[in-house]
Length: 116
Image 1 (cartoon, rainbow, N blue to C red):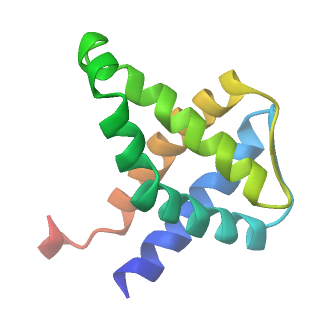
Image 2: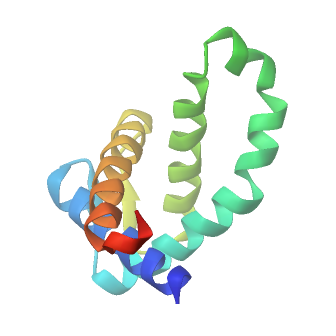
């Protein structure tokens, strides 16, 4: 049940972020749900490989290169999901930052007192 809750929260965060940012377009909430699933799979399978391969530059930049990896994951998701468009790398970077903030806020709203 927790994974369904997280997917819905991620879809809501993606939908809200696409509404806020003019360089990102998301056609419908169903597309946002599909995007949440694709981002989850990419973060599970592709991101660890990218983090491993770019470990030296990540250490050299004190972890800031992880933001670039997040933007690349967003751009890959934009290629895979019909109805989700990102106008470029900087919009993908901003999308990942704003979506993370909104997602964290929504997850904190859904926590029960015994979960804290």
